[in-house]
Length: 280
Image (tube, rainbow, N blue to C red; front, side, top):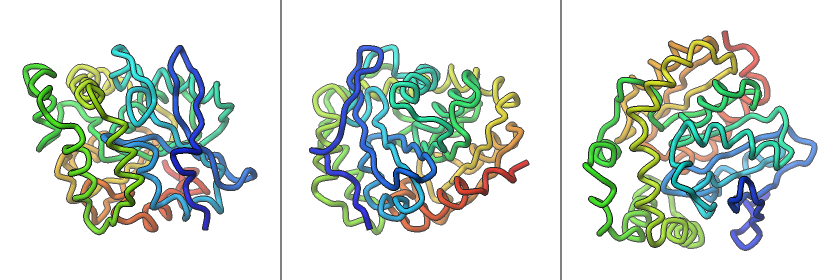
């Protein structure tokens, strides 16, 4: 089975003045599939599931602006802004009629993308990231949102936070190159700056709640039952507000894409290869 291209093989493209990192692989004749980086990870979060997807899909994995090793900018640490930016990305990379997978921070961004620019993607799969209003978040994510300012985290060691988080993923013997990529992705101020994204949730998810009923794109939530940051009420509440959505509950904690990569890839394939077309 094909392995994800190594970081040294990743490509870059300039979009709106930013250098955006991405990798491509899979079958050129396959169904277009876009994978968006979770946080505080990168496109290499998909290293375990990549081999199970390459036979069916033409894959483009993208580090969102300010995440992974893509350039960031203050105005883009926002789900709404990233949702807008995704249309620029698909245009620049020539991605048409793709299915998009965006766990974690990609959840709200993809919902905004389809609310603001309907049809950017054929369908979306999300989960593990806040999208409901009022907020239903817990643990460290709540601490990030409720802190008086970003400077409350300025003294933290990003390498310790990031490597500790990935080393603690149940059942995942994480390759060193993946840990190294995550640590490099959030070195210096990058981790602290990236927290600004989730601190926009209270304001922007309230706006998103008013847009949900008009999103016609099929949406599937892959919702982990044991997520320490997000209640299962969140995806169920958002799905109930969408015209074409379903929730699949997973026997996982937060990082389902790394904990159960084969099963996660099977859910992606079943949805993108036909399941999305029958969601009412």
